[in-house]
Image (cartoon, rainbow, N blue to C red; front, side):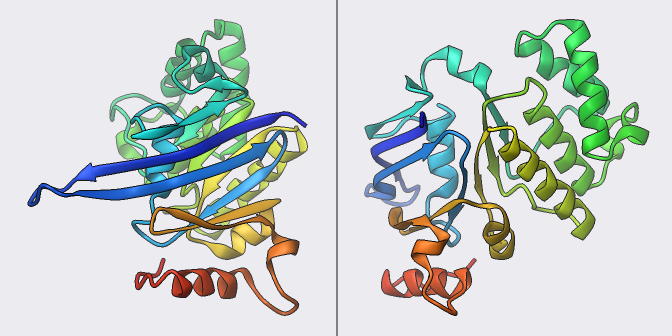
Amino acid sequence: MQKMIALSEISKSFKTKLAAKRVYALRGLSLEIAEGEVFGFLGPNGAGKSTAIKILLNLIYPDSGNASIMGKDVSDRSVRRVVGFLPENPCFYDYLTAEELLHFGGSASGLKHAAIRQRTDILMQKVNLQEARKRPLRTYSKGMLQRAGLALALAHDPEVVILDEPMSGLDPIGRKMVGDLILELKAQGKTVFFSSHILNDVERFCDKVGILVGGMLRVTGKLGDLLQPGQTLEDRFLLEVEKAGHKEVM
């Protein structure tokens, strides 16, 4: 099975504003995700999840280590054509409509106009924005913007989908819709990497999980291998946080 995402000994530090010392966001993070897997990335606030995702997307650079997608270094521009990304807080130009947003995303990914129209029709239905597709995004609720961002991430039918808190701001109906989309991507053989604070959703959708605490990957593997009889994912998560001496909770 092809290795779709690989992080090898990734470390990343930042200089604090008030002091000269550096604070480590990631320490020696190594992780591999195979083709067709849905991987849940968990950790308390400040654990380094978003930093790892930004390194995967080549938005920031690690101090040391290597990151690759489909065997290519993330700095390779061709990687962008096979990756779809939804940030935790999508920020779009307010006066675009959802339809125009997807046209922009499809054009930037090299799709032809006919393919963009077809993908737009399909995705507007999937994220339940068909009735609002011609409205400017400034009139959208937070949940609607999240769904528009998800459609944008999928506009070019990517092989790897990276989602940072995809359920953020969604009501139960929206969460079910996103969950159904994740399961559909899995059925299509796509690779999905997502971070989430909603442990029940992770248990529902993921083949494997990784728990990041204090910038270090504390445990990773299949849910069935990680959980003891009667143990929930929340129990295991809190155990790893406690073992690491981390006081914050999600």
